[in-house]
Length: 166
Image 1 (tube, rainbow, N blue to C red):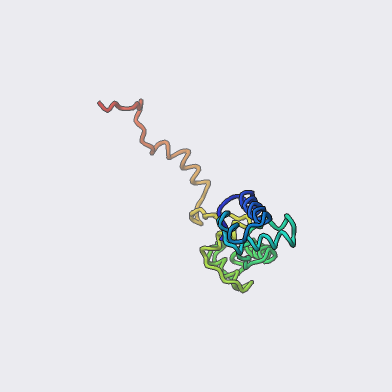
Image 2 (cartoon, one colour):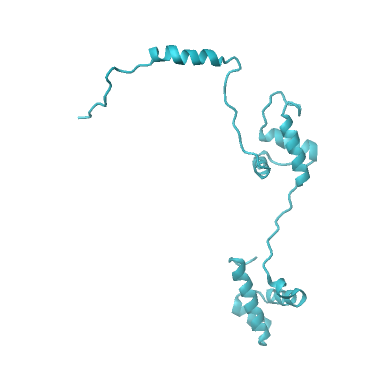
């Protein structure tokens, strides 16, 4: 496991170990002085011998490769943009569970629905919550009610002023 520190600190440690090794010290002595395993000193020495100073640079840890390729994510985005009804669902609402099903059906890759949000964020999408409004809602009647009836219904005492607590 890599010791904590910036790339500069780690590279300095490797160069210091190899300088000590070049002075004629043993692998075990150098490893003790820089607080690492002798096998690490050997690996750094071999990397310097084969690649030069470039071999001592800290390489980024790649991590696990993604299960969906960029091409597949692009295809997934096209599927999502068509809407969930086009994918066989009764409502035009995408849920993480539905997206997980679509991914498995189209790409053969199984994801837990809790992981779908991370994939969507990688694609530049964000979580959206639909507004809860009745399908029968009449905006014009609501606006008229707010303008005409609401002032009459609203309770506001005439000459209202804050009341003292004492």
